[in-house]
Every structure is written in C-alpha cells, then in structure tokens.
Length: 120
Length: 108
Image 1 (tube, chains in turn yellow, blue):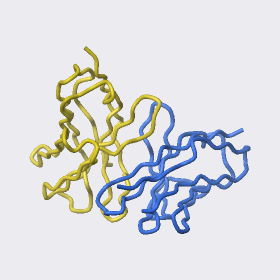
Image 2 (cartoon, rainbow over the protein chains, first blue to last red):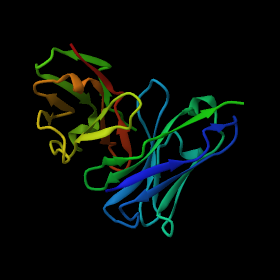
Image 3 (tube, each protein chain N blue to C red):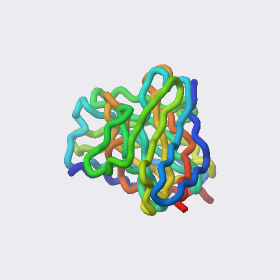
Image 4 (cartoon, one colour):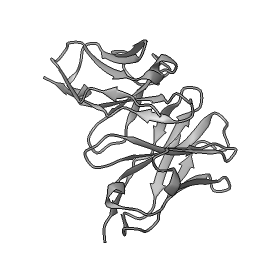
C-alpha cells in the first residue's frame, strides 16, 4: 500500500522560507510512472497545484509560485521536499504531497496534509 | 496560461442523478480527473483518464467529456456523496496541472 506523509513546521514567520518533506512508503520515487507532487489548499478554498518532480530530477512549478519555489528529491531516503521562500499570510494553507500518474496526470495517492500558518 | 472552471455549488435529491461539470479550453485536448473531498480529509481520486475508476470507487460515479467540458455524473446519489468535488486537467502546454475551483455537492 502506497503511503505519503508530510512533515515540517506548522508555523512560519512572514518572509521566512517554508521547508516541507514528503516521505513515501510502498513505492519508489525512482519510478518513471509517476511525478511526485505538492498541492495546497487555503482554509475554506479550493486546491492549488504547486509543482512536481520526476525521478530524473526535472521539476515543473506553478508559474504563480515559480520565483519562490524549489522542489527536490532524496532517492536514498525515498523523500521529496518543497521550499517556498518569502512566505506571506496568503501562503497559509494545508499542504499535501501526492503521487501523480504520468500518463493520466491524475493524483492517485495523497498524504493526509499538514497545516502551515504564516504569522509573526 | 489557461484555466478550468466549476460551478461553486450543486444540489441533488437523495437517489437522483446529478452532473457536475468542468469547463476549459485544455479539456478539448486532455482528459479530466475528478476528486471527492470531505471536510478535514485529503482528496480521493474517483475518475481519471476520462472514465476510469480506481479500485473501490462505486460504479455510480462516471465521467464523460464533450468539446471543452468534462462531466462527473453520480447516478443514484447517496447521503455519503455529499462532499466537495474537484476536477483537474493539464494546461495547454501539457506540463502544468490545473484545478477547478471545486463544486460543493449537497444531497437533499
């Protein structure tokens, strides 16, 4: 059974950089069949795609976040990570990691999500 | 860039059929996926590749598409189907993911 688990701080100060890690079990992030992705959801709002990384190391980012965003992977730990800089209150959201099927571009497994609040 | 849009809210009587739609130019080229999300939970994939269902998803959920519109149909809606439904698609470049704004389904 594939499982994804987000980890990271629940509170970030404005202007700081958010760092989140997703630990994958039950599958290898070296698989060429999937992208490893981040999605967020501000309180009471819809879902927003953040970006994804492929086993090759290639990454694609939401253009609205690209200037502040970096997604990386550590195959030795079967983890991938997100760094989002210059955080503001608008970045307060539940952050999900998810597995994205390459051929269908559909998220088939999700982490439970982690709430990140931006506040001084 | 492009976008996909959904109606914010839809209601259906218990046991009746409801269609939830997702519109966008990219849907002329790429199929939509659909997710069900209940409060406090992660989304669950219910339809992908136009009309494929993951294991465990009831067959009352089905997908279809026509031109720039993708549809999720629930045939015989149950009380437990009350949830938010989100669609996704690729954008016109094929590399980026687009989310619709979500549709809140109320089962009366």
